[in-house]
Image 1: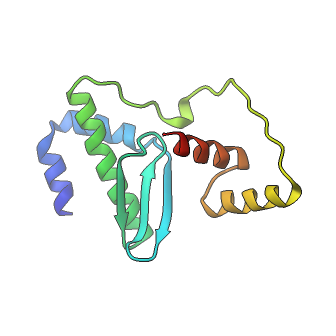
Image 2: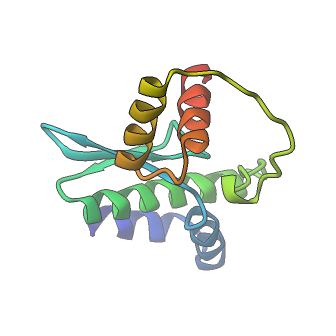
Image 3: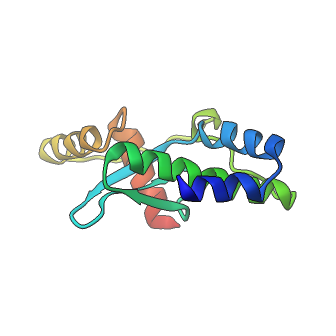
Length: 130
């Protein structure tokens, strides 16, 4: 991939390997797009986006863009976002929904690849808050 070569040449190999290892731990959010095929981002760095004609190419492009972003943060000695899977969740928020709303949320969560309604609602709320 042409862009992949540009990313590799822009950073030291060790730093790039560290950035890739971090980026591979991030959660992905991917949506279908009628014109582009798929558009995606990571949960941890929602401003870093990529697209691809196929799901596989979209994932590869997100990983490449995220790796470059993480490498840039490392290079500039900035804090790198902790993977969502490693963050301690010790606070709870409860909401009440109707049976119909629960079914709709469950369907949307499954469609978007979330493990639960809670994960789906948390991601949607955090995306809206950013």
